[in-house]
Length: 170
Image (cartoon, rainbow, N blue to C red; front, side, top):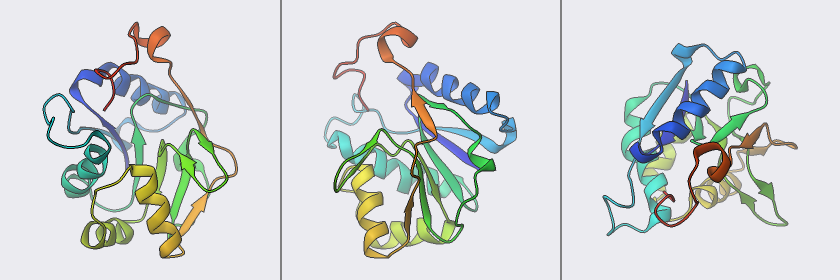
């Protein structure tokens, strides 16, 4: 199952990501959009905690089996279901960039169900999603990072006729 995490205000972006997956050959029934927590509705929660909280409270309970976690606004170059992956480890397939000791952007990440359940039990969702993935994967020696990202990104301004500002950020 491929799960696109979005918020209601970004529905158009989620649908573009959905279409991008269809265009790469992913069957419609293998894709699910889940609308998470919007900063405007939850001002008391730090914005970078909203995504891990959505993973724990919405995505894990609403899915069965392994998942590909995808952020809305992601444009796929290839079908992630056709990529050979290690089904025992976290496979970080889509990201913005890799820095010396850090990976920016959890744009497309494969999670085995057993790891999702362990994350939920043992890791507090009080950090950025990319840090949560990286730190858990390194600590448990179960993180694989694709040499090349399989995704591009839609540009807010040109693709959605909006300005990227605090009101548009999850």
